[in-house]
Amino acid sequence: MPENSLRILQVMRAPVGGLFRHVADLTRELSARGHKVGLVVDSLANDAQTEARLQEVVQHAELGVHRFEMPRVLGSGDLKTPFGVRRLARSLDVDIMHGHGAKGGFYARLARLSGSRAQALYTPHGGVLHFSKSSGSGRVFHMLERFLMGQTGAIIFESAYAEATYSALIGKPNCQTRVIHNGLAPNEFIPVETAPDAADFVFVGELRDLKGIHILIDALPQVTRPDGSPATLVMAGDGPARAELEAQIARLQLSERVQLLGAQPARPTFAKGRIAVVPSLAESLPYVVMEAAAARLPVISTRVGGIPEIFGPTAQELVPAGDSDALRDAMQAALSNPSAAKSSMELRLAHIEQHFSIAAMTDSIETLYRSLMTRA
Image (tube, rainbow, N blue to C red; front, side):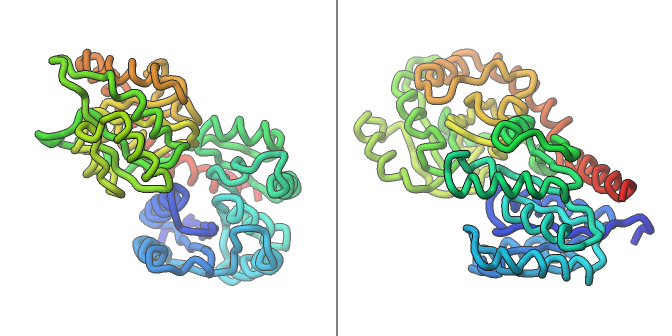
């Protein structure tokens, strides 16, 4: 173990979604660099799927996986868990407590307020940014954010969009801030080989209104291939809007052109379509856009959240959210001019390779950890 290795606690509530993917990637990479890492998670989240996710990273968590009561909404557990996290941090002699999401950031920083010597960092991952100023929960969480600012060594935002949203909702942070994009693993940059019977377009995501799925179906009917035949679409995912989506597909007589695959892993699904479409109405920094671009697919997407940061030099190609006509035109252009779509894909890929790797992400976070220890 290197002499200058750090002892780090990653604190989160539930190991799900993009937040857990980020924590898992960071834990594996920090461990590979010689740091000792522990995880703090919710004791109430103990279903089989959660346990399976944790088992994927437990071998990289030399300081162990520790569980505390973390209610989804504010509750009695929130009064005692920070003290438990503080005791744990002391017993493990950690240097860094990195809170992820609203609850993870709450516990990591309250533990420092309660007397821990460890430096506390915080990555919102959306979290408090999803609460409106006008809601009761929003007012409470935003007040806590301002109160805990003095215990925050630094806030890491996964996108410039998230940083701007935080400042607008809560106020400009008076601690250090960094924009550090999430990253992909080297094997995610391996090109996906398109299946011979692939559809023209592929969508991967949850079937809910916020993902713009109904806009996508509205855009499809008039999109044609260069030979005039109708364009096709495969959709991987499940969710609360599936029945409504099926009805829309039937109403527009698209049943022969749209295939619903159910929930599927992203990379194998990319082989089933030639062009990825991400028509979201709202996003933060969606992994699926990075994954599709890294897999060498042309990507059509909306100008929401941090997606312009992923598109980089091709951001001017993004379409307005909720505009089925603009989405249709972009889909038609990609089919009509595949060489232009390929050129854009290559520009986007170079940008992502440089700025969105796990190695680059960890370099920046590790440097920030060390700078805080130097100031301590």
